[in-house]
Image (cartoon, rainbow, N blue to C red; front, side, top):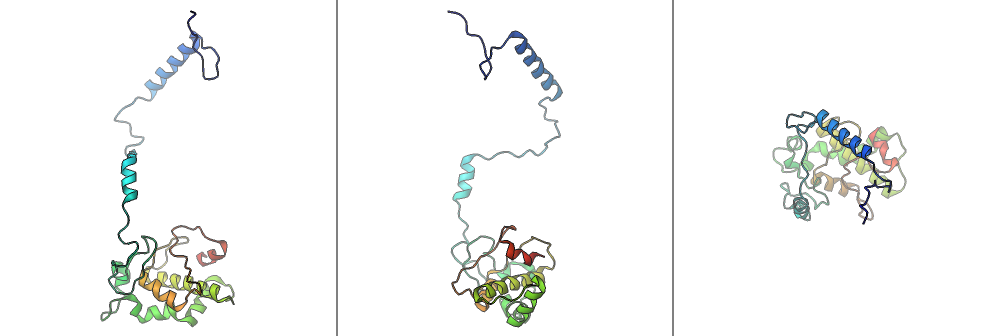
Length: 205
């Protein structure tokens, strides 16, 4: 039988000149870019974890989800994300504002004034968005909740920058939701990135 002729992936025959050129090119690349431990291009090149390690991490649930045993002030809600499962006593900048004879930030009078006083919230909303107050109670209360969260963040953390979000203690969220409830009890929760409807982006201006 005749010996099979090598071919490329396209089915074209490979001649000796092609093989020689290929070998020369490989040698040239190896000489120019040697495989050396002294290569400084990627000194901290990350190593891919094995699939078994990834699966093991995914199977470990966050012990805070589905309960509020982590709450230290006695006023936190059961939250739906790990970022939201935080008590006011666990954040140093928030804990500094807790009155000495109280256990929760919601007992601070400034919290009541800044976050859950409806008249103040109306003013803050108009200042932040330059938009008219909504007539629909659900939209109105949702806007007031977002305004309260912005006021709380400004009070505790100062200016963070456009698009930077920090989770608010669950107890503070609970107080705001009680002050401005959703009629259908549907709440958005913490948003990690700027991925929400354009109407709400007015709060980031």
